[in-house]
Image (cartoon, rainbow, N blue to C red; front, side, top):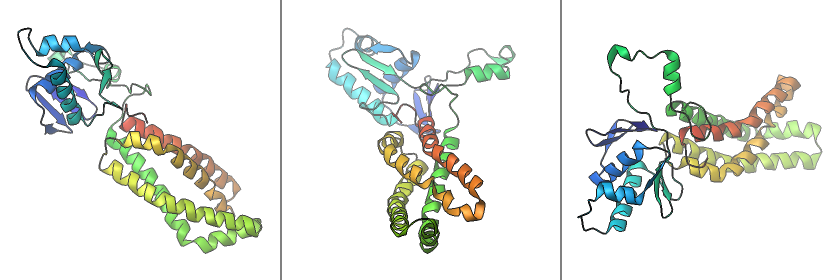
Length: 269
């Protein structure tokens, strides 16, 4: 079975992430297997007790189950407070959140899938209701957006005198000074922010979705302010092109949020 970047071989008792095997003890793996049987459904603690510990087994069940679930979450890079895979249902049990791709059960020529069949079987994002794309694609697009803004900031800092000259031609002295200061401040904040996002997505930081959600308001304000930057080039590209570029840039922060949610589903992004 597959979910996200993980693959589970039930027969071999193996959990793999992007092809690399992850060490997981027997009981946490059994819990994962039970949850994968009914993704999206509640699995009670009592059901887990009956299947993992026979009636004649003397064990501190609550402590043992909590420990096994914590080890499973650790292997998945998951969090109890903000789960992407294993959700805790208070005083009831657990639920598996991610979409699960199951292996084909019908062998050989009898299973001649059409293109429509393959599309129907494709995993869908549980929140956005779209087919889940390759994570490398969404992460790459997100990284390219960060590089684009990083280039904006650096280019603007290299051309500060030109920016001041352009703004002073259509704004009074105080207005040009405000824009000049805004460029300095937002570029100073934006450069380390973009460097962090580039490094986080490059190293596939599993909590990037959660962290991006927290900083989204800052990203939104920065991106909306820099969306008007094309108007500083009106004398070179014309008003129409500057307007079109600004309209496109106004949408970019929302596309960033969507890309993060596609790459890191279930993280609240």
